[in-house]
Image (cartoon, rainbow, N blue to C red; front, side):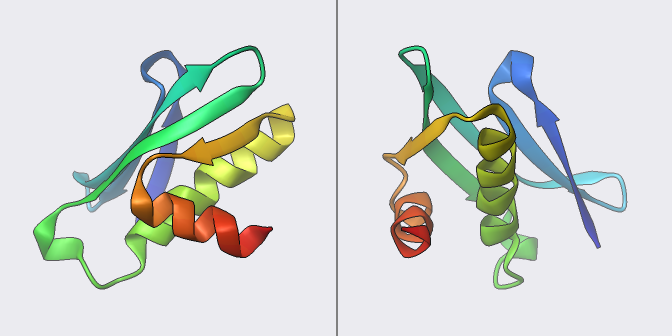
Length: 85
């Protein structure tokens, strides 16, 4: 099982599995109320397990609690955001 941790000071969400980083998502702050997801990375040995979606969903949940709009230049994150509309 992967655990996801939010690091606001780094504008990053990290996923860990058995103590090792398994993937991460980064974003840039755009204006007062928008985050742009720019990278979603899953390390090769963890691909195909739905981890990228878990990371994007964590960012969506955090943004919703803060009432922040999300955009994405990361093509994978953009697909997920488009499905949520």
